[in-house]
Length: 222
Ligand code: G3P
Image 1 (tube, rainbow, N blue to C red):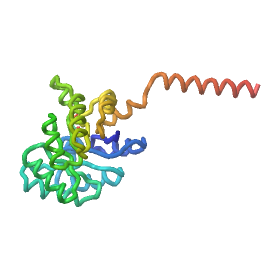
Image 2 (cartoon, rainbow, N blue to C red; image 1 turned 90 degrees about the vertical axis):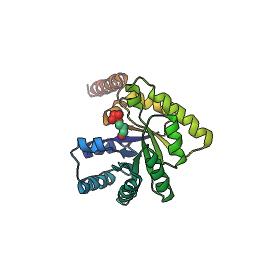
Image 3 (spheres, rainbow, N blue to C red; image 1 turned 120 degrees about the horizontal axis):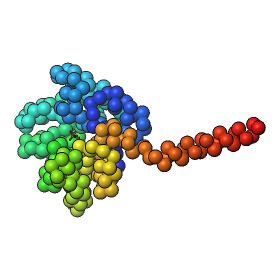
Image 4 (cartoon, rainbow, N blue to C red; image 1 turned 60 degrees about the horizontal axis):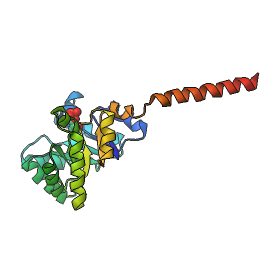
């Protein structure tokens, strides 16, 4: 399973990249706003800065909601860097835009997906990625991981090449559960990725190994 980081923070992207397990980045307008990135030129520069840190796909979301606007914005975004993936919302115009971008060889990420039917439409339009929002479904008492499982079955039934990008991941168990049901990618906050490293028995075991090594070294000296 690929690990993407879900942030627009350059510091966090660098930190995740340094861990050696990062495969890409997803952003959205809320994440860009959180970093105080606004205005056309600053936003475009920020995407290039992200692409220069990570050697992997970087999702950049269109703001337009009409077909013509999405095409214009998406083409501008795609021209920024070969790793840019144009992120398009799951709407009628969005699916049409995905179909257009697919024909042009531009990678797409269909976002704001909350049902298997929506995921099926994204795959039919040729989306590179589909983003079901696991955490936001859990928030409304609906099993987000179950949706990932359902989409996996549907895509495998028909051999769709669209990759399932589990989004709105909130904690390390989401990552494990999405891996168990066959998500292709999990896009996560840095905290969820780093939490995977930790286990108390690893910490205790390492302390014991080092203490025994020190004891043996002291015994040899004496
Ligand atoms: O990028 C979309 C998604 O990952 C949003 O996550 O935590 O705002 O539901 P969240």
